[in-house]
Length: 465
Ligand code: MNH
Image: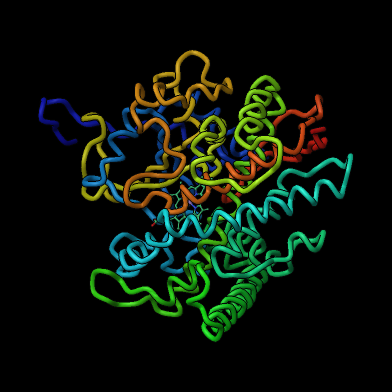
């Protein structure tokens, strides 16, 4: 045991009673793993260790512990678990790269330009045109129950495809998902399964391993072609992340990204950039339908900004629509669509001057529980209340209790992009439609790489204007 400066002994991080051999695995095996995690947090507190197969993971939801973990001089992002299992397809792309890998810094410096104000003004019209297609899609199917996840996937996939690499998945030309997305989904599903199984079990699943290899090869081929075609066309004419990456030099040393790394970045944007925003829109509509008074208030603001005729939105319009941002933030608080992220100590240290921890420990910041912690969110943390994100309310609260986009230099590069996209979509949807839900629906959450509401349907009734 080590001594702390004030002479106390450091303790091990608490851990529920283990099962023989399988450790804590039975605690998390559930048909509703996400709800189960929330229950575990309630039962075992704000900081507890779970031994899962080869990894030992500390689940954290206490705001004070989280504040300590967000100190980047002491803790670093950890690429483990699900992130490790998508390395074969995302390589040293931004999400799955370790801090110390050269390509992280290089790509971060280059791609930051692609998310600045100037670049965003190129993307805004794309976001509006694609949202109009969604509006038309719904108008063409009057009275039909809308599968929220499916239709918001059409929207966010088109937007990331066009802004990312000038490519359409034809989501508004066909009912069925693009064949290529089925390949990606299958890779992600296999990654989700394989990282939950011990290595020796995976070796007994040669079919899964082979399918994964074939799917990755197919994906690489598609992207290599997209990159080659883009190079042939006059890429300078267009703004996309791909055009930027092919052209731009690292401001630090003038180097450029390799073709292989550019491919990893595109796959990363595709994976990171559509599901999270899609699910944000689904959860938001769920809450607006549950709270008609909030929905009406948002609609009246939208009507005031847009006036009698629908038109393109400027950045100035978007700042007048800040109440919609508040709604989206509150939705991300209750259901952070990227459910958490991982850090590890840079050197052996203590937590809260109380627990000992080593560089091997993986801390999983479990956002849904942090975002509902009574220490930070008061007596009624489960209630949906966009006023929590009014300017004054935000100022009065420490920022580390709300981190749906991660922490520090490894936080989400697409944060502003995602929020703009969601705000544009929500604005036009509320302008054109009244929303109608099914009273018998109770929210269930599906969990893979991201979380989404399960089987959530609604109706969009054209507003008379
Ligand atoms: Mn996104 C990192 C959440 C939309 C591209 N994103 C992260 C992290 C979180 C996150 C959390 C930190 C992960 C970690 O620490 O391991 N992202 C979101 C959410 C949304 C989202 C909740 C939508 C809502 N992200 C987007 C979009 C894009 C994108 C859209 C691309 C256009 N995100 C990224 C990239 C990173 C990232 C790239 C990795 C950044 C880095 O480490 O350099």
